[in-house]
Image 1 (cartoon, chains in turn brown, red):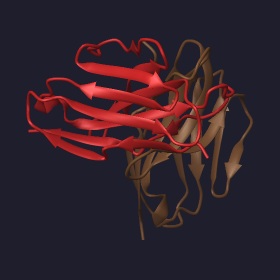
Image 2 (cartoon, rainbow over the protein chains, first blue to last red):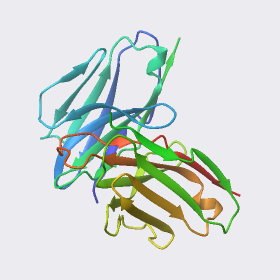
Image 3 (tube, helix red, strand yellow):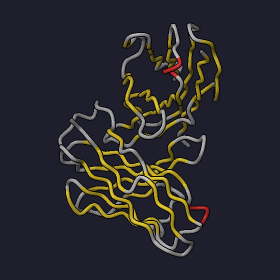
Image 4 (cartoon, chains in turn yellow, red):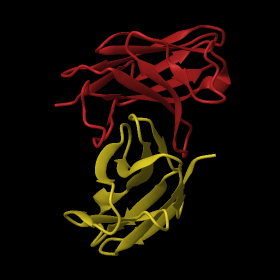
Length: 111
Length: 118
């Protein structure tokens, strides 16, 4: 059965800390791995990764994919309270837009 | 662009009644829409893929007679929870893809509908 596994499930840090969120997957017909941020309602898109070893970066957030080890990480440096959210890892299948999600990592950043 | 609107945002209904949730793509045409369900502190579980003009494709374990999906136009898909029970209480969220969109593009999500069945 295809699956996306995230760790840790929850994390509490202080402002200014750096965090690393993990995502592993076992999916047939892999096309891409995506990271989303979910605060209260709709997930908002962060990154899409399709190639191994190429880091994607947006401000204090960065992510990289390892297609050999079936693994991705999301890094957040100099965390702020506004980074508190659930971070979802998802995998999209080839041949369409079907996407499955991991359980998410609930991050809480203390002031 | 790529705004997806979901309605209602919140609904409370009595056990045994049916509830319809709408998902609209406001500024684009969506050949395909997806319906997800999210329990508290859990991830999004894909329920079904809704294709305009054809029958929805349901994921294993999802009862198609209970969760009726209709995608009658390129901008609207509806999910009807029939004969709702308290265990159907959940957060339902839809996503849509633009017609002709490159597969290497992310999903666009609605803001979700919180259903409470009493």
